[in-house]
Image (cartoon, rainbow, N blue to C red; front, side, top):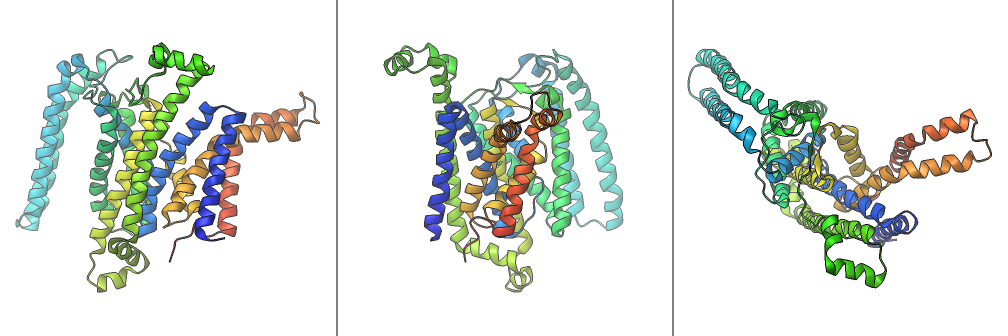
Length: 435
């Protein structure tokens, strides 16, 4: 079987599984899984660009995904006039102080002053910056968070179309990746993983506790949609006539139409990123990146700036993850900082890339589809298998009760089993990197 036939067979099998779920569970479930699979595949493509192209081990995936979610809130949520009046000017002034202070510290550090003067002036400048920032920003933040904390308590956003936040999320993640890369990309791979994981935790901690910006653990609900609402569809005469004509249930059909709309938008983004990734991989730039990945010493001997190229690809991959994070928040309709857990984003996305095949964009696609499909369906499938194998036992049997109660944990067993099987029989993934 050639590579083309193998790819076609695997992708065809996945779509057959989605159709199977649609017929035997519901089309709402099937389309919901498929939309999440698309977002997962985009994240896997971003991580594969970093690991597969350049060998960069980024363990801070969840931090960049969370920045994408933050962008969705800032761009799309309408502003809250009361909190802006109470503390908006103070927050803006504190951000100006932070920007000017950072620029001043950078100027002093890069100036031609003697090292002894720099050692004295840089810490003093940072100390003064922190004092001014706290004096100006803290009272304003307290006034903002004290205003109706149960329903508001934050500044809100700009009230723009939420699709714009997808690109802003990528840009925001890319800017943060630039700052992180400048500090960490000189580290060895294991230290780089520790550093990126720690910085991602700092980002999540910030989002959980800065209520004036994200409402913290109280979450931001009711984000606008780029597609119609089910209630609006159910109230339209043409949609009611359409459902009556074909005898479709009104409520369920409206939900299916919304999910199909999301699917079309997400598929357009996925196809665009995939095509650009393939072009980049097969270009001279992509060959240079793989040469750096395989032998940094030889690449440096040929005059390549390895650190600059690593920073470049670290920014690109992180921006794609940030874009996917904004898409995920759009799909969920809310921003929940507590859901950004390492298992959900970092570990799961890494499993997608490893199972699919590092360095192969087709592998990232099938890895994202397959892993997320199993992640969602493992629980009902595990419950079905447990009930099937324990059916000879009585309903009051302690073993049967224990197994049924813990059937939800089957997803962890199946994920681990899938990873072990792929690493045993296909160490380079389902679609290994091409020569």
